[in-house]
Image (cartoon, rainbow, N blue to C red; front, top):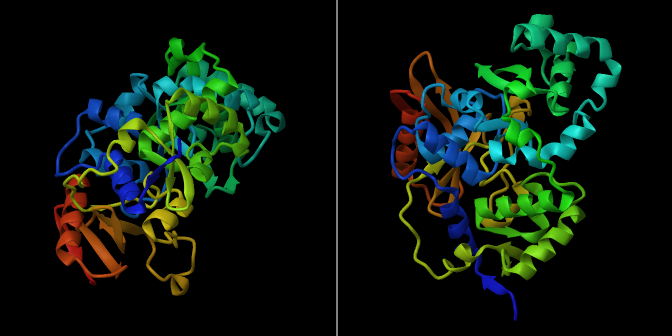
Length: 375
């Protein structure tokens, strides 16, 4: 039997509908917040505060205004955790065992074997936390500047977290407070040690659950599986079992689930326009975004201002199944205004839709006003 052929426009519609974007302004419950994290599999965390933190923007587009301290509530109750997935991410607690092998390696992805180089400090940090409770690099002189000028204390905290000795107990602002893992992660999830095959199956199932359809050569990107050949055996088994289905999107081999396959000829569901975080799950795979949505989505925050084409912190505007504009957005918290500093339309302008998306985002961020300063 030949693989199902899915037209690109149908693939886009199905993928967008699977994301679960909110259709109206609303305020989420803690349970809805957790469910959104489960549906997405993992939610990328980033420190940039130009509009709001990346994970909060991604979740707000699905559930609306986040409940006050909702993410810390989920952390404290052992319902979500933070770890390396697509990048540093929020994940559902049931997936904690999937990262056992990564924790066992213990090497920080940027700084490698930090603990071997700082054994005395690492032992002191663990002993202090065991005695006095959650802590951070602040208690040891601070974290340093940026990602590449961290203090030894900050590197040690990150490395102990990567190795599974510590877990993120909560955040104050963006600062992580770490505690001993056994005081954060429920015991039921700390004792399970899945096989490599089980982990690869789970990563594949979660990636497809989140998107409905994923092209085969991009499957590894969702959880940054390297090398991607680690997925080959598990993918073959899932296809033979019928848990996943082979398909094609245009010229590209892909996989989907049965629910996605059933929607190929369905009419589009009603959808509200939405401004996407640059690290949103829908667009974080830049190659897939270019291929399916026709947008070469680039982040220009690290470019000097004269070299920026679209702006400092650009949010793609999604209308239906199309990315139609790049909007340089900034939260002016002092004035209580969400500002669109620059709008670059990909084709025909849709200012009323942009107004709607800006108003919804402002409501989610508790900003009472919107200002679109250029159209």
